[in-house]
Amino acid sequence: WRCAPIDTPAAPGRVSFVTRIASPHPRRLQHRWSQDGKVRQTVTLSVAASPTSGYRTYSRQSVSRGAWTVAVVDADGAVLREVSVEVR
Image 1 (cartoon, rainbow, N blue to C red):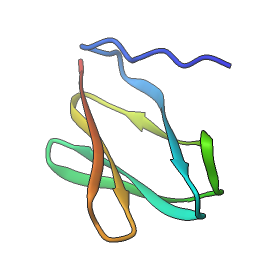
Image 2: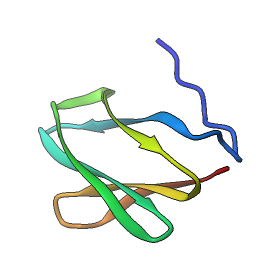
Image 3: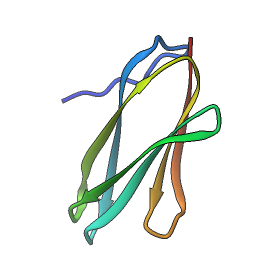
């Protein structure tokens, strides 16, 4: 199982964003997909407890031209990670 970072600039199309998190307790996260500063999609993801190797989850979005950002947000609203890509 492999993931590859997206090239930037990227071509329009379907993009997957994978999150791996290690936690001793089950958690809920969100992937917030934004285009040019406007939230386009929010995906709520349940993450099982896995304190050592971590648990992987993902979401997908069809992206069109613009500046895209995916934020990983925890249940308290804290941004854990943010990745940006330009789509041309």
